[in-house]
Length: 527
Image (cartoon, rainbow, N blue to C red; front, side):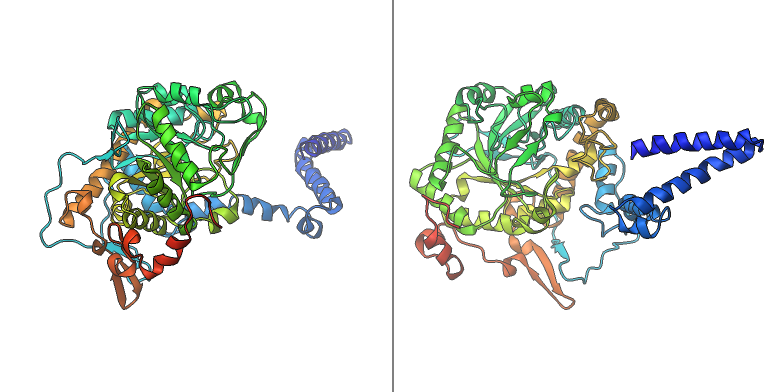
């Protein structure tokens, strides 16, 4: 296309010059150039074979492609209502922006949402509200096998890798975490200097590529892992099994993006395409998974260790629970990533149709651990579209102990939901390795925005809980969250879902769980 444009422009200028040579006015020459260009474009459209629209409607057909190209922007800015945009509606984005800036996030005149629409959820207020706690509660992460427990904030930065995010975005996120006293998950892309320099608490995530702790052939390197896990800023280590955006598949980082800096962080050759396989090499059975998590904890010097997954088969997760019981050890935390989560690019079929949504995923993990008698030693983190205090409280009701946010934190550092994350052309410098684009993100300006957003969101959650008569998140109960079933009926989560009693699976599994519990095998992942 560029070659055609150069040729067409050359021809147009030449023809315009010819027109001038025959003695016509200069103004006729100027007018002739665009007409000649359009004529040439029409000829090319008629001769090309790729686009049927252009063959039938030369020149005019380009308007279709132009409108298609700017459709997302037209939809976002001029068509969508405040409450029905996707993945995040305008109301949610506005709340995040305003809280990050430290301005009011209030709205007059009542809700615009249809509170009688099936699926609408609401929290139950108390007739005797409590005072809002002055100090936000924290969650102690660390079971009986952990010698260096960590007190986790109620809301933290979810997993986003350096390479997917720019250096400036990582610096701002970690600086905000350091200022606000909350944790920052590194993502699976390795432990970079941008994670370490600001001094924020880190959850170091290891994925199937073992970036930052891998051998030359891509296997796990225990010595390098132990060395990096010993860093003071690394408070927890996490093994990523799967993520919400694309559970069950790996990833590819094109060689063109593997510059010297990313190569050093990930322990991979510069300029060579890097493949993250969909499976782990360090385990192949539930029992081996549990043993490897215990090994990671030992190598890290006793720091809290866990794993992250997008829930799929309940039977497979129950097999992991059986493996924990058989081995006498368990992870200190499990992060549940909802199928609606995801900051990076993923195949549309996976993003739309694979993986359990966060609500059901949380309920599965929470109830499985309760029923197996393991819940008191394992903390649950929730990740997937947590952007407001309401989102956080809902997840706590559904079984989580704390929450992680990724895209909301991206909004806090300037993301405008342009959805160009995978193209290296992010207009705000958040998800790009282009230095000219990344420089648009000013770290000094965005760092306090991350801190303010987290602080305001946790404060909102505490205010909501106080209105429900609760000061401690552990006192939230399923009956405090209700869902409308139809215009005439609404039910609480206590009524909608089955909640297991401690040790119930060990004693007498309920009918709905019995088949999966019986079939769960700690020595294999059954399909």
